[in-house]
Image 1 (cartoon, rainbow, N blue to C red):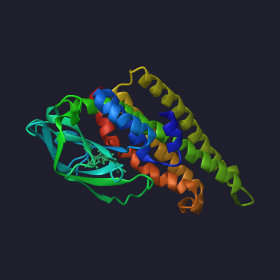
Image 2 (image 1 turned 45 degrees about the vertical axis):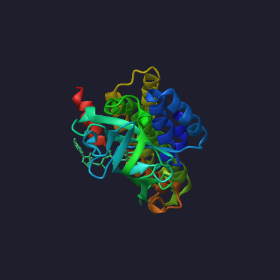
Image 3 (image 1 turned 135 degrees about the horizontal axis):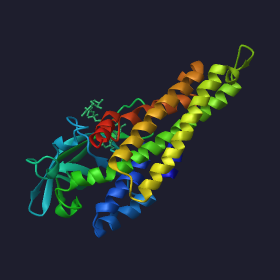
Image 4 (image 1 turned 90 degrees about the horizontal axis):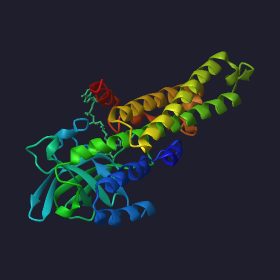
Length: 306
Ligand SMILES: Cc1cc2nc3c(=O)[nH]c(=O)nc-3n(C[C@H](O)[C@H](O)[C@H](O)COP(=O)(O)OP(=O)(O)OC[C@H]3O[C@@H](n4cnc5c(N)ncnc54)[C@H](O)[C@@H]3O)c2cc1C
């Protein structure tokens, strides 16, 4: 996960963390022996690309309200519905689809269904035009009477929402670590640029405002790294709670935004130019406060346990 965080620090490819930190763990945690053997080796080698499809045009934060249905028909499920904002959607060979196997129920009617992209009735929409993270593809997906065998259910039918809640701390920690690493990179860019750039006969770094701004950010980053280590070590021991994972995502992504914005400001006009790395880091950073559950939802999760 840390390796991914370092890569994310500049070449922001959400699709890689999605595959290695999220989908792989769903299959490892809940998959049958057959599902693991079929997908994990190819995911590791990069021969198979995967996605997880929760969000729909009509619902994102309110996951219990998904409308995509996977209805039993003999030894098959018939999947109908649509998803949106799906990372890796253009390239995925396999999609973990969050669907209602019992549409009358709320959370208890949700299952995770593996849908291979080769199935009839599966279609991809366009690659969505995003503000940033251009190296990751993000798509709409459509399912029209897609038949998959019942052995494509990941784990037990009706336990999908429980599984989602179980995996979210890791997903959120992964985003938090990526955010911390990207914040560090933004800071490093600002230090290097301001030492180089001259104004009023001295380097921009020599202005007290610059040094005070950077000193505050350096302190925030120091605290952030200590917290990242703490959260990661709790996660490795299986102790990171849903609220702690949410706090990590909330805090590190807010830090990322604060650092990126200040670092861009210290670049002056150069910060707004795409040829400078800070412009791309700033653009890529914005979505971290939205995906993986918005930061408002993080506050809901944390607040509920108080
Ligand atoms: C680049 C990108 C990649 C993504 N990748 C994936 C992916 O791979 N798979 C996937 O399934 N999804 C993915 N998403 C979707 C993402 O997880 C959702 O956009 C996110 O969860 C928010 O859902 P929404 O867009 O429907 O917003 P909404 O739920 O409509 O929220 C709109 C606003 O209302 C606020 N709000 C909603 N409910 C509450 C509440 N209870 N209390 C307070 N405020 C609330 C939100 O915080 C937000 O500010 C991706 C999104 C983006 C932008």
